[in-house]
Amino acid sequence: MSSTTVATSNPLERRFQLSVSMAEVEQEAQKRLQRISKTVKMPGFRPGKVPMKVVAQTYGAQAQSEAIGDVVSRAYGNAVVEQKLRVAGPPEIAPVARESEADPVLKFEAVVEVYPEVACPDLSGVEISRVSCEITEADLDRTIDTLRKQRTVFDEVTRASQKGDRVVVDFTGEIDGVAFTGGSSENYAFVLGDGSMLKEFDEAATNMKSGETKTFPLKFPDDYHGKDVAGKLASFKIKVRSVGEPRLPALDEAFAKSMGIESGDLGQLREDVRKNLAREVASRCKSKTKNAVMEALDRWATFDVPKSLVQDEAQRMADSTREDMAARGMNVKDVPIPADLFTERAVKRVKLGLLVGEIVKAKDLRPTEAQIRAFVEELASAYENPSAFVNWFMSQPKQRAESEAVVIEDNVVNWALSQAKVVENAVTVEALMADAGQV
Image 1: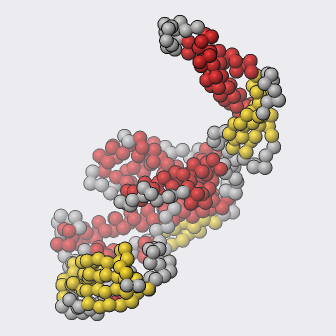
Image 2 (image 1 turned 90 degrees about the vertical axis):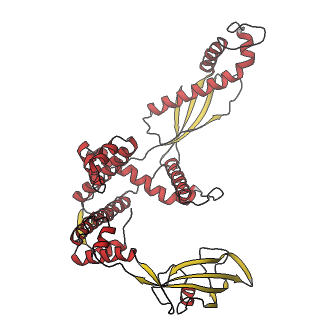
Image 3 (image 1 turned 120 degrees about the vertical axis):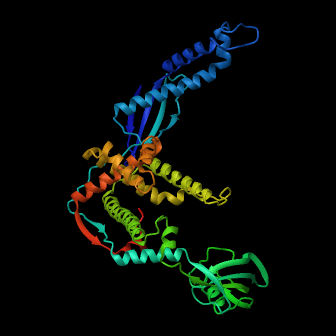
């Protein structure tokens, strides 16, 4: 076997020629025929007694084809070792035309992508924002008010509807006198002013009493999600069935019990809200800081990445999107979700993955058992029986692997913050909750 590297314009592509002797192929083919002859069954012969000439006539072409595959595969593997290549995916191997059938050598051209050379980054001159947030008593008041609003009840009234009321309506819509899909419904409930309906529809249903009807025009926005009606003028007729006035539950013992405080003590409710809010705030601050670190690493990662890794990642993202849509009850059987849609994001993920992997290796940031357990115990704090959750979680290979991945990322984030110029960014709870800063 011999190999010769051929120059290529792609910095991560290696193209080389392989040469294998026909004698080696024939030797490998004969070994295969010998194995076949021991078990092959043919009419007129006992098993294992079929003459080799007959076996060769029947299985010779198959044996030679498989022999060529094995010999070339070995030659490729040897060339990879010889040239010390870190291959990033399967090779493309194609035969080179022989000058004559008598040529004792078979030649092939192999093309394969290799991993880029990735160096551990120097972040000493890089600014990274670290987000922090303090919880005030006013934040607790707002959170409790939000919990009350989530449990709003609507009392039916006879007055005209106004912003904040819940209305129940029947409606039908037509475009050019023809009803359209999704343009009609009965007993449809929504809250005026909450943004769930188009502005014109919301305004039309305002200042109406139960039993009243109204016809009004509505022009769908040009970028409306329903492409069949986007940009078109429709005529809607609505009938109000009922108007409900909002009523918040009183902040009392009954409310506290409805929130899981068995004693009904409002002080205990406030402390529970404080703990839960603190947990959420810490999680979002951590997420935003992690996002800032990853963006900094992404800016540093200017190296090329193998196309094969990007394609695989884009396909995984497309498959994940399809699974998520199906889990939400959407019919995605005939919905095309091409992997190409995710190529840009896939490139970023692959780059970050390679860079994070290099940082973990260079700085020995693999998670310790204590770190993994601490992470799981933090998750368990939100459950009624934390110890049982920890024992279960640690015994599940998939969950444990996912927790290890999170701890590795945490270690990389902490390392990056220790190397970079950290800019403290204190935000309010309101601002933090308005922007979760998802990575």
